[in-house]
Amino acid sequence: MIEAKLERNPDHMTDLVAALREKDAKERQTQLVDVLVEAFAPLMERSPAEFRRRFRKMASDPFAFYRGSAPIFYADVVHDTDPWADERTGRVWIQGDLHAQNFGTYMSDNGVFVFDVNDFDEAYVGHFTWDVKRLVASVALMAWTKAISDADITRMIESYVRAYVDQVRFYVHSEPDETWALTLDTATGHVRDVLIEALSSTRVELLSALTVVDQHERRMRRGPGIRELDDAERAEVEAAYARYLETIPQEKRFSGSLSYKIKDVVGASGFGIGSAGLTAYNILVEGHSQALENDVILSVKQGNVAAPSRVVADPEIASYFRHHGHRTAVSRRALQANADPWLGHAEIDGVGFVVQELSPYEADLDWSGMTEPDEMITLLADLGRATAKIHCVSDGDSDHTLVPFQVEDAIDAVIGPDESDFVAAMVAFGHGYAAVVREDHRLFVDAFREGLIPGLQPSE
Image (cartoon, rainbow, N blue to C red; front, side, top):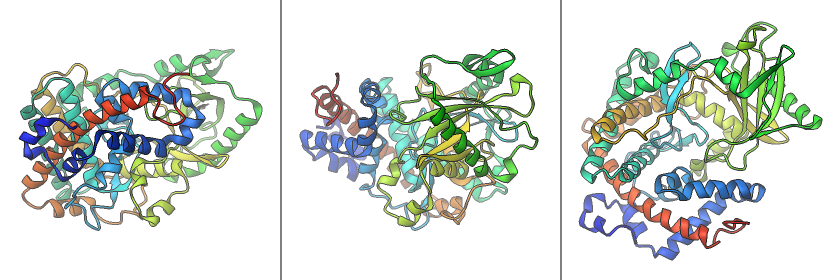
């Protein structure tokens, strides 16, 4: 059963946690397996070896399990009490898989290094609280692995949530929205360190790592994780690329005849824990001049079913997206100001893909060297502000059809002038659901080891 100490700490016993604790361990294990199979069965059947690797990574610790099991989170959280979700705040753009490691840097389309949320594969329209709840539970899980006390975990979550609310209120009284961002001019502490790390990266370094120059022509480097395409598949990808160019907003398109010329195409693999079984390609294209250091590598990755979409029963939202690649691109523009000028989508053989630059200027947030609660509290305040930014600020080319209102006004209204109840609820959820996940992790490992996941034996 979920940790007994929760019985002595009723503040951590949300309705959802209490309901999950009442389940028999075998009943809960069966539910976990059923949700994972429903979410991933087609991909597991297609690439069982990749999913065995994915599940072994998830088995390594509770936080890794949590990162790879977003469908389980949504199957649970959809039943949680949510007094802050109304007809507007229950229908905003959300990142969909917000955890402590899904933050990092990018270069905006106006050339500025920004620290922000950096993964939009699970983005969708749903309750704004789902992002906040998923993040605070991840903080509690990560802090637990560092042997941080419950009292300090509470302070960490409070720092994140209060900063989130403060930033939402900033947007209520600020115009235009894009006036604030975590950049080299505004960031301090660990966030500034991450930005400086990104600043030292160069396009030449990325190209040297992933490409070779032969007879004055650059091409993709062949090796592990790279697949050679036959003529037919390459022709399909190139035709999809030509159609993709039309999905780039007119204001973001580069001028000149040299830009966008294809130099090479390869199949690619080796993405993160959530991309097992998905088809992907890398396309090397001409930059804004014939100088070899201006070449650009595009990632063309199959869009996956967004985890929140499995519990959002709104046909208007589902029917808005042409495919999952379209959803990912549209969602990123809705969540990220000054988005990648290469961002777009494509369709290959009826399957949707998201297209974006494989950027040399991305540096991920690394928690491994952080051990003390006080330094984490400062960082989490920045993450709270960054979360508010994605909810309240969109790219200039984003579509406001699904969310045709000012999100900051709606969120501010449901939280009210005193955020104490909201903060307390998020603290309770973070503690309580993290305890559930730790037990779920054990049940998942046992199910995988015992061959209880249909179609995916632990070894073959």
